[in-house]
Image 1 (cartoon, rainbow, N blue to C red):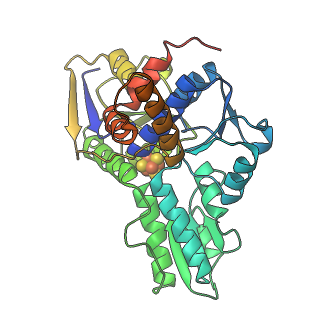
Image 2 (cartoon, rainbow, N blue to C red):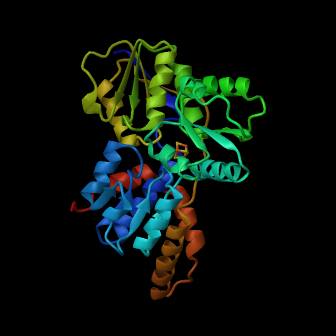
Image 3 (cartoon, helix red, strand yellow):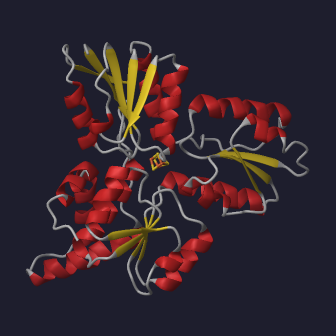
Length: 348
Ligand code: SF4
């Protein structure tokens, strides 16, 4: 093959950085097993790496023994499940992305005001399940215009919210149709599709027109990864491949290839994919925008880090200033490095 265009931004977003660094910290500091409600992020390589170190991913809080440490995933957790986790464990760290929390808040406040809420999302995706559970009697979860049409004639005021990781064009079609039917519909002033979703899709659009093949790195259950494959197909790319790792790349890729990655795909896998493609004319990074968003660790984890840091500082006779040190270190640290660091720990 001749050349690779590498979309920028791609891969880890601020929410995934936050969640992976938080779980990596717990793995380093606490005795296994650590229980994680749902996959921490939807990426098979990431999940496998944590499993090798004694993290147990569960689908129900009832699978967690009383007293064990619990992490709640980046996709957001139903309020009822958070309550149950707090009954079971004295240490519950909630790694929800703040942009998912924003949507939970929108659903909660609109439901309290008596709105019928149309929520565009993927049925059975962890984020959609958690968000719908915030106000189950008010939320109508739909995936398509056809499903919206079955809801017509809602009687009270209508609000429209969305899963953060939808394909932009699909979302726009449904939003426009809802607007035509309910011109007074309430929508958040800032779109629920997050910056990471829209940035990665825009970056991919800018390279897709030059490519005969696009490779999207990420897992099949990652909503924003699947959205990237839809964007590539809608841009007219002849061949769109989604791969978990470089071992899934076919041998017959030729011509100009675009490479991008879902928000939960690690850099090490993207690097492996590029190495395997080995383009004759090299790799050109095409940058659409620069992301510098940062989400600090979950508050429960910050408290725990601060406590341990201050105890350690005092033990060595230093001034204890846990909070500022933790945050400045955390902002500098990268989740990709934390993941690679985990490979050096003994497997359970
Ligand atoms: S994709 Fe968006 S909503 Fe999801 S974790 Fe990343 S920043 Fe948060």
